[in-house]
Amino acid sequence: MKIKELRKNNKETQQEISDKLKMKRVTYGNYENELTQPTIKDLIKLADYFNVSLDYLCDRPFNNNIGYIPEDRKEIIKQICELDNASFNELKTFLYGYIKGKENSTNFNVYKK
Image (cartoon, rainbow, N blue to C red; front, side, top):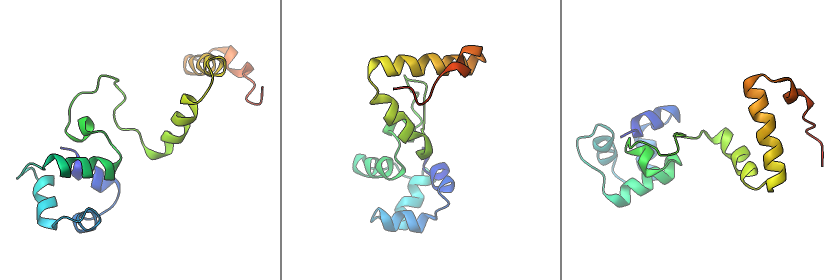
């Protein structure tokens, strides 16, 4: 389970997280050290707290090959999902060009309506 890695990335202590999730610190520590398995209720709490899927939390492989998405990228992903088809296709063309270093990526007008 990835809760230790996620906690350290958040620069939090076991006590801070266990307090926020209203569980005993020793219970959280046992989960983190894989001495006991969390209940499904606690797994959901942990996944919600760290804003990750249950699959990610439990080290299950992802079908989408994306994995954990950092907070600073979620807003842009949300905006992309809200684009109409034409705008999405323009952005997709730009991104593929940018990634592949094609010249047409520099011709994309960000302010085009």
